[in-house]
Image 1 (cartoon, rainbow, N blue to C red):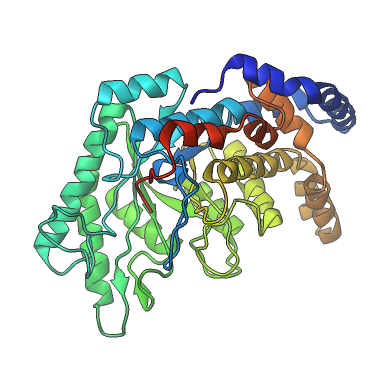
Image 2 (image 1 turned 60 degrees about the vertical axis):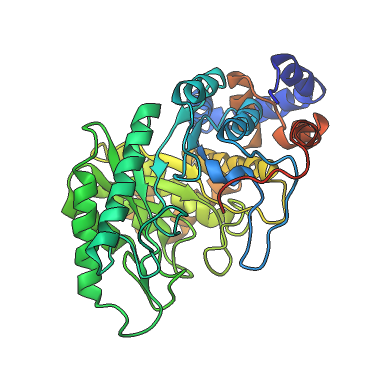
Length: 426
């Protein structure tokens, strides 16, 4: 299914007048307060978030998985689904492939399809947290950290293969997430596991093309519940530094213990020029991978406040790779992704409204109340008209969820694909 330009125009007709009234009111108010509304809208239009190839189907839990029917069963269909989201939101202009779930059978055809939908290939993701049917070795006791050299070499080669796949498609980054760790005390020697991981990552790093980045992800627990080899941002940063200048830390919002100060983490990483990318989701207890902004929208805003500051003041840090990494167990996956994109744009727009000069003055004066007022003043602003304008300027729809439902996208996908298709991945 492909959303046609005429369908977008028709979808906008009924709400265009209301949008223009709301936008004009907000734009006038913001302009009087010294904001460059045109620049903010332009930044929102340019902001793109990658959709992971595994996220177009229904998610699952340890106990079951319930399909939403019409799921994409091929990589081509997944890219088509991202095309639908991008047509509506104009914010999902990239796909992040997860290998070996989505190895292209025809690279030229896949690139042609993505180009036709204005979709680029973002970071490619390796998978050494599952055994593959044709694998000679098992990852039951770890991959890059494993005591068995043969297992480590298999995991290293897989990552190199992923780099080669991404290179054919125009990707510029490899994301490495390890499930390696231990379930019980004494099972692993912590130093040996960490050193093995460092050595393995260095071997992978040597295979990176000159213009590529390596993104090292971390997670405090799960699937191992006693220790994780790359348990926090400090471990990730040490491993990245041990590899070289092209290796960076990747922050997943769900990969922190409760009440971790994620905004402080991203701020320090940007200062050191070592923040490489972001995986967006939300969580209540652990790595629940819920819809972005569904639980802690203010925390997301505070993180974006630091990101915006870093993007403006830390030229030593590279452009960031953005990706949604969330599981949709009881929602239509495409609707969930649209909601996540909206939440990300809202947090970004509000962060762009923070008066950084006024905030710095309040900080210098130790005016804690004023600091809070400045942040919360931006957060309490209804920025949806700005996001709508950004979508309109880029050729999207004013209300993506409403348009998705009025066009009966899920119904059309079921007609095309049937009820029994299942997406690869989680």
